[in-house]
Image (cartoon, rainbow, N blue to C red; front, side, top):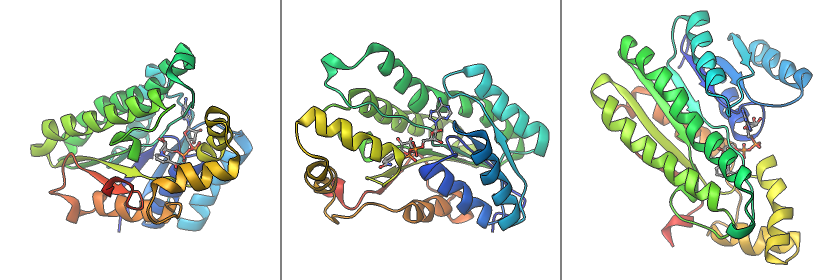
Length: 260
Ligand code: NAD
């Protein structure tokens, strides 16, 4: 039961972030949504959380490329609710290309959104959590935070970095009853994955069907996509009181990919 707690979920206007925000609202947490997208669709999502779960849901449009806007996301949350219990760093983007064809601007963008934005949310959230004497920070990393695949240099570098950030901050805040952990999903069938099927097909010179079967699900012994609900299970453990001794870990929810 997370009644009365306040959760910020970056990149929660679609995919995994949206599912995690809905799951937290289902446990009674007030939610601050964030992410890009159509304003009417986002408003429908926000209003739906309030209607379905009886919580307060706000939307903040901070661009994870802009440090001042990220600062305002955390500051406005604390101003509105007077607390911040759960921070989920989930916003992420992908670009699939050989390293020599990776546009330098894409590299910068992926590092900024997938890694640096978490540094900014965390540095503003930690003082609030310290003051409260409790906090939970969960970074959505990836199986690509543990192992590489070709053509994903920026993404793999960012996700490895995010796990490094997770461990470092976990050490710094452990005595303050704040936990910092990562969840490392395998392939989940969200828009991010749908988009890269085409790009991977081009990069490898194979069909879309072959990408799904021979590249994506090939890596996962289960031969199944991971579901958002399975990620929610890991998240609810990490944010619970039973998660109090788990610091700086990355929970693999990747269909056995890393066991190979
Ligand atoms: P998605 O594209 O469905 O969602 C990404 C979210 O990030 C969206 O809400 C989008 O608006 C937001 N976002 C993108 N750029 C932003 C910016 N500049 N500022 C603010 N928000 C921004 O993708 P997803 O698959 O749900 O991915 C969510 C997270 O999960 C990412 O960090 C991704 O790397 C990670 N992940 C996904 C998979 C997968 O298979 N789908 C696997 C491992 C890890």
